[in-house]
Figure 1 (cartoon, one colour):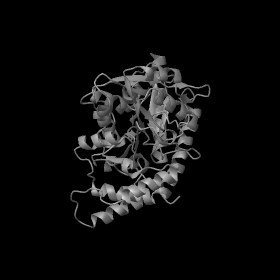
Figure 2: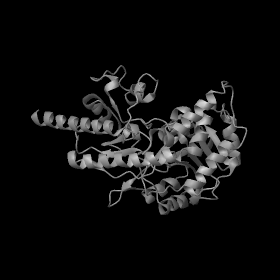
Figure 3: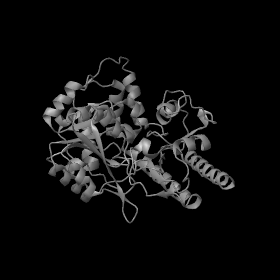
Length: 409
């Protein structure tokens, strides 16, 4: 490998949410929280960004743009960015996108918040599968719309699957207007097969629902996996919006640039008219993202190999050290969805427990994943292997110490 993914990079005091903002996100219900660990000694396995340095080709492009010395109001007035993104979709998903359907957003989450309010009337409901990324719930709450949940179930092999009968029953509810679909799924890491996507598509089309497909993790696949955009399965369905971004793929969340692919012309116009910064972009973001889509594939392939190794490390560690833990191998993302309910059956707040007892920051449970998540933790594995090993050992030691204390009580 040419990239050093083992390098440990100091992120303290960079105003990163990962290092400096975790209290307000993970522990908003515990104001003034003090932990028995220095912040710089915490192992951070929570928010979905990576502890890896950005690809050199991206940094070089940003530096070259800085050398132009003026950073004024910026938009996209030529085809280079759109050509780069469309070519990426052709190469990676064999998916052809019309240029006019591609809109921009500072992020997928702001787009979700805006689109939910544009699509749904006050009496309408939004449907999601659980466990779910908490911002799906917040999009409904922000728009003051009702949230409906269809829990994923487990197959005989332990794989997370859609309960199609429940999903269709909720889609058939006259109040249901919008489905927010996650492809690949966060937090379980499922890559949906074409047959699964077709069943979902048939149900959505049967009831004429709008669907937003959040595909932000689509490039972060295990080796041998293939992402199928919902847009390929529903090639002519006008009520589909697809969200993709370079933020997860290339660790560029702070650059604030995402793609929102809106087929319906009327909705595109409304989306543009309601977005106060529609069409404006950060000039450094534009330079970096163009470079990512044009030159970032080699870096991404090396990243995927490294992440596969981290997932193997986690699976081997759990099997040897915490056999009561349960993990179905994630087919995508750099996030592992691990059930620790049998390891700590008496612990309600797993996020606080591991922060306090292990010095490990992670996200857990129904509060952060909407529902159907009790006893589960989400572990971000996008970190140097030495840090991952240390974090897992701390988790194991905290569980063992708690067990010993409980048995002796």
